[in-house]
Length: 319
Image 1 (cartoon, helix red, strand yellow):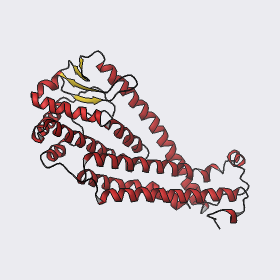
Image 2: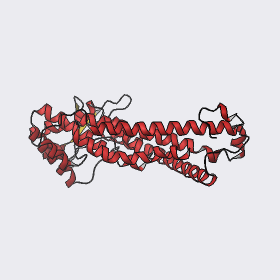
Image 3: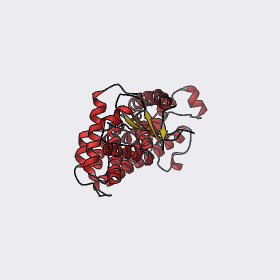
Image 4: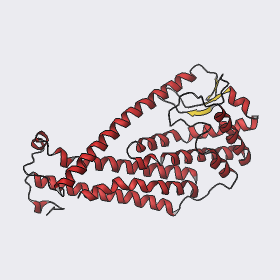
């Protein structure tokens, strides 16, 4: 029983190599959807399994056992193993929740500060220009009555040629149009649930940047020009490390591994929508779903037996 609920806690480590292959083999927007959806599904499985694994330890608390009407010990496997796994699950879930609340609060604080930072800046068609000598450009998503906006500093405008500016702005507009901040936020939230999913956040970011690069190249009609704009913008930002505080889901000019992005723009755009790696992601999610469901049903049957139910009435009896 316990082993079935442990499988979904291990499967997220399989996402990293799959995500790495997906962002290289299929179209960026497809890879973005696939890796983000898989991260979210596996994160849900992790949290659900940790929650179910709390039961063996929780039902040993007299008040909880009385509330659950438990009249006999819960048989969830070897006693020592069941209690140890349940204790570890309790600790992991507590840490994940505390980390999520703390980091989410910090993200909201940075998000509000970023909007306050551009308040009052000259605006034209969703483009905000900050009078700042530090080169920077980013897509700032909207919230409530605040619409999404592309923010660029005068330092960045001076660092690029006119045609390169248009390519860079097209890249940032593509982030807003594709709502890439939502994908990044979901991936980041999943990463707070499991270290294996945290490692996949970089691949979601890379897929988002590649999708915006391809959109900018299509808008400008020149892949080489777009590559030059991305490279120069990244170099300009790198030369000045001091930047305005931004939430992790706000995409910037130097996002992702820039050399890999530039190299991809100098080659043909990927056209594949399907690849074996996407099927592998579906199988990983399916395995997590089946193992967690069967484990949860089995443990539920065990609780019913502990409550005095007839074991023969349980569809997956522990006998």
